[in-house]
Image (cartoon, rainbow, N blue to C red; front, top):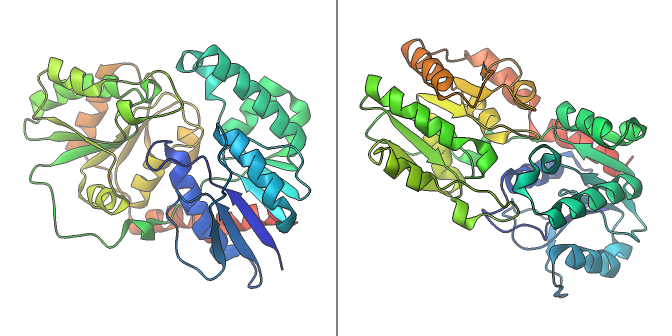
Length: 362
Protein backbone atom coordinates (compact mmCIF):
# COMPACT_ATOMS: atom_id res chain seq x y z
CA UNK A 1 0.00 0.00 0.00
CA UNK A 2 1.50 3.32 -1.09
CA UNK A 3 0.36 6.94 -1.11
CA UNK A 4 1.74 8.72 -4.15
CA UNK A 5 1.86 12.50 -4.04
CA UNK A 6 1.62 14.60 -7.22
CA UNK A 7 2.55 18.26 -7.24
CA UNK A 8 0.01 20.27 -9.24
CA UNK A 9 0.27 23.69 -7.62
CA UNK A 10 1.84 25.14 -10.75
CA UNK A 11 -1.38 24.62 -12.74
CA UNK A 12 -3.15 27.74 -13.98
CA UNK A 13 -5.94 26.30 -16.10
CA UNK A 14 -5.27 26.88 -19.78
CA UNK A 15 -2.21 29.09 -19.22
CA UNK A 16 0.83 26.79 -18.86
CA UNK A 17 0.77 24.94 -22.16
CA UNK A 18 0.98 21.21 -22.80
CA UNK A 19 2.36 20.34 -19.35
CA UNK A 20 -1.16 20.78 -17.96
CA UNK A 21 -2.70 18.32 -20.42
CA UNK A 22 0.26 15.97 -19.95
CA UNK A 23 -0.41 15.81 -16.22
CA UNK A 24 -4.11 15.11 -16.77
CA UNK A 25 -3.25 12.17 -19.00
CA UNK A 26 -0.64 10.96 -16.50
CA UNK A 27 -3.10 11.01 -13.60
CA UNK A 28 -5.65 9.08 -15.68
CA UNK A 29 -2.99 6.51 -16.53
CA UNK A 30 -1.73 6.15 -12.97
CA UNK A 31 -5.24 5.44 -11.73
CA UNK A 32 -5.20 2.43 -14.05
CA UNK A 33 -1.61 1.39 -13.29
CA UNK A 34 -1.36 1.56 -9.50
CA UNK A 35 -2.07 -1.39 -7.25
CA UNK A 36 -5.58 -1.71 -5.74
CA UNK A 37 -4.44 -0.61 -2.27
CA UNK A 38 -2.47 2.40 -3.55
CA UNK A 39 -3.80 5.95 -3.74
CA UNK A 40 -2.93 9.20 -5.50
CA UNK A 41 -2.86 12.52 -3.66
CA UNK A 42 -2.90 15.62 -5.88
CA UNK A 43 -1.75 18.83 -4.24
CA UNK A 44 -3.54 21.80 -5.82
CA UNK A 45 -7.06 22.24 -7.17
CA UNK A 46 -6.43 23.52 -10.70
CA UNK A 47 -6.26 20.15 -12.46
CA UNK A 48 -9.44 18.60 -13.90
CA UNK A 49 -9.40 14.91 -13.12
CA UNK A 50 -11.39 11.71 -13.30
CA UNK A 51 -13.29 11.03 -10.09
CA UNK A 52 -11.99 7.97 -8.24
CA UNK A 53 -12.13 6.58 -4.73
CA UNK A 54 -8.34 6.20 -4.96
CA UNK A 55 -7.77 9.87 -5.78
CA UNK A 56 -7.56 12.58 -3.13
CA UNK A 57 -7.20 16.30 -3.84
CA UNK A 58 -5.53 18.42 -1.17
CA UNK A 59 -5.62 22.20 -1.32
CA UNK A 60 -2.75 23.35 0.91
CA UNK A 61 -3.55 26.24 3.23
CA UNK A 62 -0.09 27.82 2.95
CA UNK A 63 0.01 31.00 0.87
CA UNK A 64 3.57 31.57 -0.34
CA UNK A 65 4.87 34.27 -2.66
CA UNK A 66 5.51 31.90 -5.58
CA UNK A 67 4.75 28.34 -6.58
CA UNK A 68 8.25 27.07 -5.68
CA UNK A 69 8.00 28.34 -2.10
CA UNK A 70 4.45 27.00 -2.04
CA UNK A 71 5.56 23.54 -3.14
CA UNK A 72 8.42 23.53 -0.64
CA UNK A 73 6.01 24.39 2.16
CA UNK A 74 3.59 21.72 0.99
CA UNK A 75 6.29 19.06 0.94
CA UNK A 76 7.41 20.07 4.42
CA UNK A 77 3.86 19.88 5.78
CA UNK A 78 2.58 16.76 4.02
CA UNK A 79 5.70 14.86 3.01
CA UNK A 80 5.63 12.62 6.06
CA UNK A 81 2.34 11.08 4.91
CA UNK A 82 3.50 10.41 1.33
CA UNK A 83 5.49 7.35 0.26
CA UNK A 84 6.65 8.68 -3.08
CA UNK A 85 6.47 12.08 -4.74
CA UNK A 86 6.08 13.04 -8.40
CA UNK A 87 6.90 16.57 -9.55
CA UNK A 88 5.88 17.04 -13.21
CA UNK A 89 7.37 20.49 -13.79
CA UNK A 90 11.18 20.41 -13.22
CA UNK A 91 11.40 21.66 -9.60
CA UNK A 92 12.44 19.34 -6.76
CA UNK A 93 12.34 20.84 -3.24
CA UNK A 94 14.91 19.84 -0.68
CA UNK A 95 14.20 17.85 2.42
CA UNK A 96 11.88 15.17 1.07
CA UNK A 97 12.21 11.96 3.01
CA UNK A 98 10.40 9.83 0.44
CA UNK A 99 11.22 8.65 -3.07
CA UNK A 100 11.28 11.50 -5.58
CA UNK A 101 10.66 11.50 -9.33
CA UNK A 102 10.71 14.76 -11.29
CA UNK A 103 10.07 15.49 -14.96
CA UNK A 104 12.18 18.04 -16.83
CA UNK A 105 9.97 18.79 -19.87
CA UNK A 106 12.68 20.43 -21.99
CA UNK A 107 15.67 22.80 -22.05
CA UNK A 108 13.98 25.48 -24.11
CA UNK A 109 15.73 28.25 -22.19
CA UNK A 110 19.08 27.14 -23.66
CA UNK A 111 17.80 26.87 -27.25
CA UNK A 112 15.70 30.04 -27.25
CA UNK A 113 17.19 32.20 -24.47
CA UNK A 114 15.44 35.35 -25.68
CA UNK A 115 12.15 33.80 -24.58
CA UNK A 116 13.29 34.17 -20.96
CA UNK A 117 14.66 36.92 -18.76
CA UNK A 118 18.24 36.66 -17.52
CA UNK A 119 16.87 35.94 -14.05
CA UNK A 120 14.57 33.16 -15.31
CA UNK A 121 17.40 31.53 -17.27
CA UNK A 122 19.58 31.52 -14.17
CA UNK A 123 16.76 30.09 -12.09
CA UNK A 124 16.06 27.29 -14.58
CA UNK A 125 19.73 26.31 -14.68
CA UNK A 126 19.85 26.23 -10.89
CA UNK A 127 16.55 24.33 -10.57
CA UNK A 128 17.55 21.73 -13.17
CA UNK A 129 20.87 21.19 -11.44
CA UNK A 130 19.16 20.69 -8.08
CA UNK A 131 16.64 18.31 -9.61
CA UNK A 132 19.38 16.19 -11.16
CA UNK A 133 21.08 16.05 -7.74
CA UNK A 134 18.02 15.64 -5.53
CA UNK A 135 15.58 13.44 -7.46
CA UNK A 136 16.07 9.70 -7.37
CA UNK A 137 14.96 9.61 -10.99
CA UNK A 138 14.49 12.33 -13.60
CA UNK A 139 12.02 11.58 -16.38
CA UNK A 140 11.81 13.29 -19.77
CA UNK A 141 9.20 13.08 -22.50
CA UNK A 142 11.51 12.19 -25.39
CA UNK A 143 14.95 10.84 -26.22
CA UNK A 144 15.64 14.28 -27.70
CA UNK A 145 15.41 15.84 -24.21
CA UNK A 146 17.36 13.00 -22.62
CA UNK A 147 20.21 13.51 -25.09
CA UNK A 148 19.95 17.28 -24.68
CA UNK A 149 20.45 16.96 -20.92
CA UNK A 150 23.50 14.78 -21.43
CA UNK A 151 24.97 17.25 -23.92
CA UNK A 152 24.20 20.43 -21.97
CA UNK A 153 24.59 19.27 -18.37
CA UNK A 154 27.01 16.38 -18.72
CA UNK A 155 26.95 12.68 -19.54
CA UNK A 156 27.34 11.88 -15.83
CA UNK A 157 23.56 12.25 -15.54
CA UNK A 158 22.77 9.67 -18.23
CA UNK A 159 21.94 6.90 -15.75
CA UNK A 160 19.72 9.29 -13.79
CA UNK A 161 17.47 10.24 -16.71
CA UNK A 162 14.84 7.98 -18.30
CA UNK A 163 12.48 8.66 -21.21
CA UNK A 164 8.78 8.21 -20.44
CA UNK A 165 6.55 9.77 -23.14
CA UNK A 166 3.39 11.70 -22.43
CA UNK A 167 0.45 9.28 -22.37
CA UNK A 168 -2.58 10.20 -24.46
CA UNK A 169 -6.19 9.22 -23.89
CA UNK A 170 -8.37 9.88 -26.92
CA UNK A 171 -11.39 8.94 -24.80
CA UNK A 172 -10.95 12.31 -23.05
CA UNK A 173 -12.13 14.07 -26.22
CA UNK A 174 -15.61 12.58 -25.91
CA UNK A 175 -17.65 10.89 -28.61
CA UNK A 176 -18.14 13.97 -30.75
CA UNK A 177 -21.14 16.10 -31.58
CA UNK A 178 -23.12 16.55 -34.77
CA UNK A 179 -21.97 20.16 -34.99
CA UNK A 180 -19.47 20.84 -37.80
CA UNK A 181 -17.88 23.95 -39.25
CA UNK A 182 -19.50 25.13 -42.45
CA UNK A 183 -16.20 25.50 -44.34
CA UNK A 184 -13.36 22.97 -44.75
CA UNK A 185 -10.32 23.77 -42.63
CA UNK A 186 -6.73 23.01 -41.79
CA UNK A 187 -6.15 22.74 -38.03
CA UNK A 188 -3.24 23.89 -35.86
CA UNK A 189 -3.17 23.60 -32.06
CA UNK A 190 -0.61 25.71 -30.25
CA UNK A 191 -0.40 28.51 -27.72
CA UNK A 192 0.83 31.76 -29.24
CA UNK A 193 4.43 31.63 -28.04
CA UNK A 194 6.88 32.98 -30.58
CA UNK A 195 8.82 29.72 -30.99
CA UNK A 196 5.60 27.99 -32.04
CA UNK A 197 6.19 29.71 -35.42
CA UNK A 198 2.53 30.42 -36.12
CA UNK A 199 3.44 33.60 -38.00
CA UNK A 200 5.20 31.54 -40.69
CA UNK A 201 2.14 29.33 -41.00
CA UNK A 202 -0.22 32.30 -41.37
CA UNK A 203 2.00 33.78 -44.09
CA UNK A 204 2.06 30.42 -45.87
CA UNK A 205 -1.69 30.16 -45.71
CA UNK A 206 -2.13 33.38 -47.66
CA UNK A 207 -0.78 31.51 -50.71
CA UNK A 208 -2.85 28.42 -49.86
CA UNK A 209 -5.94 30.62 -49.85
CA UNK A 210 -5.25 31.72 -53.43
CA UNK A 211 -5.57 28.08 -54.54
CA UNK A 212 -8.40 27.15 -52.16
CA UNK A 213 -10.50 30.26 -51.34
CA UNK A 214 -13.00 28.27 -49.28
CA UNK A 215 -10.38 26.66 -47.03
CA UNK A 216 -9.82 28.11 -43.56
CA UNK A 217 -6.95 27.83 -41.08
CA UNK A 218 -8.25 27.26 -37.55
CA UNK A 219 -5.70 28.14 -34.84
CA UNK A 220 -6.60 26.61 -31.49
CA UNK A 221 -4.61 27.70 -28.45
CA UNK A 222 -4.24 30.27 -25.74
CA UNK A 223 -3.69 33.80 -26.99
CA UNK A 224 -0.42 35.52 -26.18
CA UNK A 225 -1.97 37.99 -23.75
CA UNK A 226 -3.11 35.14 -21.46
CA UNK A 227 0.10 33.10 -21.33
CA UNK A 228 2.58 32.86 -18.46
CA UNK A 229 6.20 31.82 -18.13
CA UNK A 230 7.75 33.03 -21.41
CA UNK A 231 8.54 36.59 -22.51
CA UNK A 232 8.04 36.42 -26.29
CA UNK A 233 4.56 35.83 -27.68
CA UNK A 234 3.02 36.43 -31.10
CA UNK A 235 0.26 38.91 -31.90
CA UNK A 236 -1.31 36.62 -34.45
CA UNK A 237 -4.53 38.62 -34.60
CA UNK A 238 -2.59 41.70 -35.73
CA UNK A 239 -0.74 39.68 -38.37
CA UNK A 240 -4.01 38.24 -39.67
CA UNK A 241 -5.46 41.72 -40.00
CA UNK A 242 -2.36 43.09 -41.75
CA UNK A 243 -2.50 40.27 -44.32
CA UNK A 244 -6.25 40.75 -44.78
CA UNK A 245 -6.99 37.16 -43.80
CA UNK A 246 -9.65 37.80 -41.18
CA UNK A 247 -12.16 35.62 -43.05
CA UNK A 248 -9.58 32.88 -43.62
CA UNK A 249 -7.56 32.47 -40.41
CA UNK A 250 -9.62 31.80 -37.27
CA UNK A 251 -7.87 32.04 -33.87
CA UNK A 252 -10.16 30.39 -31.31
CA UNK A 253 -8.21 30.98 -28.12
CA UNK A 254 -8.37 28.34 -25.40
CA UNK A 255 -11.27 25.88 -25.85
CA UNK A 256 -12.60 22.82 -24.06
CA UNK A 257 -11.20 19.37 -24.77
CA UNK A 258 -14.59 18.30 -26.17
CA UNK A 259 -14.58 21.21 -28.62
CA UNK A 260 -11.03 20.34 -29.62
CA UNK A 261 -12.08 16.74 -30.23
CA UNK A 262 -14.76 17.93 -32.65
CA UNK A 263 -12.18 20.04 -34.51
CA UNK A 264 -9.79 17.10 -34.80
CA UNK A 265 -12.55 14.92 -36.21
CA UNK A 266 -13.57 17.45 -38.85
CA UNK A 267 -10.20 18.73 -40.08
CA UNK A 268 -8.83 18.11 -43.55
CA UNK A 269 -5.25 18.29 -42.32
CA UNK A 270 -3.24 19.05 -39.19
CA UNK A 271 -0.13 21.27 -39.17
CA UNK A 272 2.39 21.98 -36.42
CA UNK A 273 5.08 24.52 -37.38
CA UNK A 274 6.74 24.71 -33.94
CA UNK A 275 10.51 25.24 -33.87
CA UNK A 276 11.02 23.57 -30.50
CA UNK A 277 9.20 20.85 -28.56
CA UNK A 278 10.28 18.58 -25.76
CA UNK A 279 7.43 16.35 -26.89
CA UNK A 280 4.73 17.94 -29.05
CA UNK A 281 1.35 16.72 -27.85
CA UNK A 282 -1.04 18.14 -30.51
CA UNK A 283 0.42 16.30 -33.55
CA UNK A 284 0.33 13.07 -31.53
CA UNK A 285 -3.32 13.68 -30.70
CA UNK A 286 -4.05 14.45 -34.37
CA UNK A 287 -2.38 11.27 -35.59
CA UNK A 288 -4.51 9.30 -33.15
CA UNK A 289 -7.54 10.68 -34.98
CA UNK A 290 -6.09 9.44 -38.27
CA UNK A 291 -5.42 12.91 -39.69
CA UNK A 292 -2.70 13.68 -42.23
CA UNK A 293 -0.10 15.61 -40.21
CA UNK A 294 2.71 17.99 -41.22
CA UNK A 295 5.31 19.01 -38.63
CA UNK A 296 8.62 20.83 -38.44
CA UNK A 297 11.62 18.54 -38.57
CA UNK A 298 12.93 20.05 -35.34
CA UNK A 299 13.65 18.82 -31.83
CA UNK A 300 11.42 15.89 -30.80
CA UNK A 301 8.71 16.10 -33.47
CA UNK A 302 9.98 13.43 -35.86
CA UNK A 303 10.55 11.12 -32.89
CA UNK A 304 7.12 11.39 -31.28
CA UNK A 305 5.17 11.20 -34.56
CA UNK A 306 6.87 7.85 -35.21
CA UNK A 307 7.28 8.14 -38.98
CA UNK A 308 3.62 8.97 -39.68
CA UNK A 309 3.97 12.74 -40.21
CA UNK A 310 5.35 14.68 -43.15
CA UNK A 311 8.41 16.70 -42.13
CA UNK A 312 9.33 20.26 -43.11
CA UNK A 313 13.12 20.60 -43.05
CA UNK A 314 13.07 24.41 -43.15
CA UNK A 315 10.08 25.36 -40.99
CA UNK A 316 10.87 29.09 -41.27
CA UNK A 317 10.19 29.01 -45.01
CA UNK A 318 6.53 29.87 -45.75
CA UNK A 319 6.85 28.49 -49.27
CA UNK A 320 7.79 25.06 -47.92
CA UNK A 321 4.62 25.00 -45.83
CA UNK A 322 2.50 26.26 -48.72
CA UNK A 323 3.77 23.60 -51.11
CA UNK A 324 3.39 20.74 -48.62
CA UNK A 325 -0.09 21.83 -47.52
CA UNK A 326 -1.28 22.13 -51.12
CA UNK A 327 0.12 18.71 -52.00
CA UNK A 328 -1.50 17.13 -48.94
CA UNK A 329 -4.87 18.66 -49.82
CA UNK A 330 -4.54 17.39 -53.38
CA UNK A 331 -3.52 13.87 -52.31
CA UNK A 332 -4.47 13.38 -48.64
CA UNK A 333 -2.60 10.54 -46.94
CA UNK A 334 -4.98 9.42 -44.21
CA UNK A 335 -3.70 6.55 -42.12
CA UNK A 336 -5.48 3.21 -42.12
CA UNK A 337 -7.20 1.82 -39.04
CA UNK A 338 -4.38 -0.57 -38.10
CA UNK A 339 -1.78 2.22 -38.17
CA UNK A 340 -3.95 4.45 -36.02
CA UNK A 341 -4.66 1.65 -33.55
CA UNK A 342 -0.97 0.77 -33.21
CA UNK A 343 -0.11 4.45 -32.74
CA UNK A 344 -2.77 4.87 -30.06
CA UNK A 345 -1.59 1.74 -28.29
CA UNK A 346 1.96 3.10 -28.11
CA UNK A 347 0.69 6.13 -26.15
CA UNK A 348 -1.94 4.28 -24.11
CA UNK A 349 -2.06 5.88 -20.61
CA UNK A 350 -2.08 2.63 -18.65
CA UNK A 351 1.00 1.34 -20.50
CA UNK A 352 3.05 4.51 -20.14
CA UNK A 353 1.91 5.21 -16.58
CA UNK A 354 3.09 1.73 -15.66
CA UNK A 355 6.63 2.88 -16.49
CA UNK A 356 6.25 5.93 -14.24
CA UNK A 357 4.71 3.82 -11.48
CA UNK A 358 7.74 1.55 -11.67
CA UNK A 359 9.97 4.53 -10.92
CA UNK A 360 7.75 5.82 -8.11
CA UNK A 361 7.37 2.41 -6.43
CA UNK A 362 10.48 0.42 -7.45
